[in-house]
Image (cartoon, rainbow over all chains, first blue to last red; front, side, top):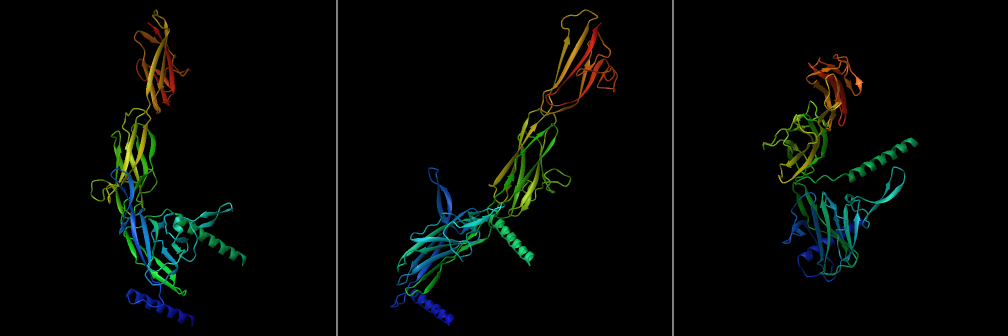
Amino acid sequence: MVREYGGWVLSLLLVTAGSTAGRSPLSESGAPQVVVDVTAMKEVVARDEAGRERVELREASATGPGDTLVYRISYTNKGTSPAHDAKVTDPIPAGTVLLPGSWEAPGADFAVSVDGGRSWDSYPVRHTVKHADGSTSLEEVDATAYTHVRWTSRESLAPGTTRSAVFKVKVR
Amino acid sequence: MRSILRCATLALAFFALAAAGTGQALAVGTPAGTTISNQATVSYADSNGNPLVTLSNIVTTTVSQVASLTVDPDGTSAAAPGDLIYYAHDVTNPGNGNDTIDVAAVSSNGWATALYADNDSSGTFTAGDTLLADTDGDTVVDTGLMSANAIFKILARVTVPAGTASGTVDTMTVTGTSSFNLAISDTATDITTVNAPDMSVVKSVLPVGSQPPGATLTYTVVVTNNGSGSATSVVLTDPIPANTTYVAGSITLNAVSKTDVALDDEGDFNVTTAGAVTVSIGLLAPGASATVTFQVTIN
């Protein structure tokens, strides 16, 4: 029974999404429809005319170990009613490491996961380390331990509103 | 039952350690050609609390090959003239793709150098070690094709020419250069300091001034090694002056009397060299000296 209900909801969503994308007249009840886009750029150190170093962003179709990639996630509510409890989740891509402190997302709370998105904590995650002498201490996990980042919007996303979230990773 | 439980606990602890070790290991460069892809998900709810999910586009970035290499460590050694000195180095490819690393060794004094593959990884020159070859035909010897993160052990040899002055310092620069990107190179330096003996001989006579016939003259000869390397098989030969007669049994070495016949001790007269005092001093360490005395009478 529950499963049937779930299936029904899913099909309704698909219909809703399709109708909005097709620019058909808005349904009277109104529905949120969030679209999300990710871009990747890489940081390149360049010099200006005075010889000063500055970081520029370039397209990132190709990269190399040690490069910093900047992911920008933009999400827009193209629907006709607010999207509530919007959460943006992004896995740290394989072959990269989250750069501490590199995230920004106005109006959202940032969280990280070290277990593939099953549980979430604020940054940094600490774990108990047992030492040879039997003592224990609470230490930050290695930067490579992070698997996912997530932003939770503090306020509902009104129709027509766009928000963005940024984080950086280092290519291993 | 109890022991089984303990075994299980131990096994778990072992795996936890292994996992921690892997996680903290220095990240190997992501292999060239790897695709780094990213896709974000937005979950939200409509006004009725129904959950909705949207997936983003997938953005992909391809990892290109980046050359990187190190030549380590630097070396220092003391050497004597004529020595062949071998310095062990690790040529490492921390890049993210295959690379053939050219290797060259240049001595600051223009001394002969040679590069060997340390085939048995002993860090010293052994019979199985072979000269590096030019495997890619660019006229420079190389490591051969190295996979990412591979280490190739080499020995760089410098030849200290015979007769090199004590205190001479040579810097051999061993340079590795990537064949994938010629702009990428690294060097190690091997500093060789030459310790050679440097002998001085000072001779004095007592009494000084003009002496009548029949007077006895005592000659003192001090042989000193002023160099920084040991002198071995040091032999002092001193012909007695004309118009004098050697006083039999008068040789001393470091205040110990020596006979005039050969082979029974370090000194002899008129045996090893006709008409001369000969003393085999032997080893003289840096800073050491030996004092030889003998007497003659004026004819």
